[in-house]
Length: 180
Image 1 (cartoon, rainbow, N blue to C red):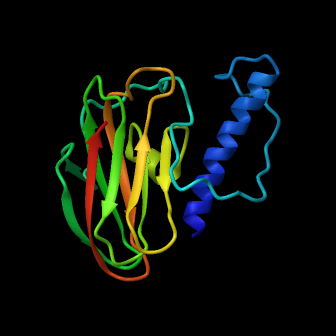
Image 2: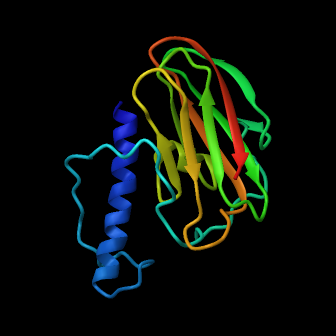
């Protein structure tokens, strides 16, 4: 649970720093003048979270899934797996140009699993950031996460990394990433 709280705090803190910098009339990319931000509590986010930014990331993504820890999955091709209690599994899906949205579904579970999605690299899914989405519905059941664009007509091109966190018991599951 501490890992989730750290990711939430990182994402919230980073957004606050940029917001404070923008309110001072400064350039949002230069946050050296922003005051220190202390986050003492983090409110739970909604079960389905959409893209928190409307601008493309400042770094270019890898053109393909390139992290050896992540299993590459194809769009619209269900991937079946078994996860142990407390285990973390990583996956990657490449999204081509012109995809209006990405829906990540976790189905067929018998344990409470959580799903996180990060763009454009594995580090984002591990520690949160501006291009980080999650679904942590409580209880056993399907997890569905929809990633939609900010101001553009389509989501960003490149690899989206997915983390599935094991619940309180071993379980089979089906992971599907579909273009909307």
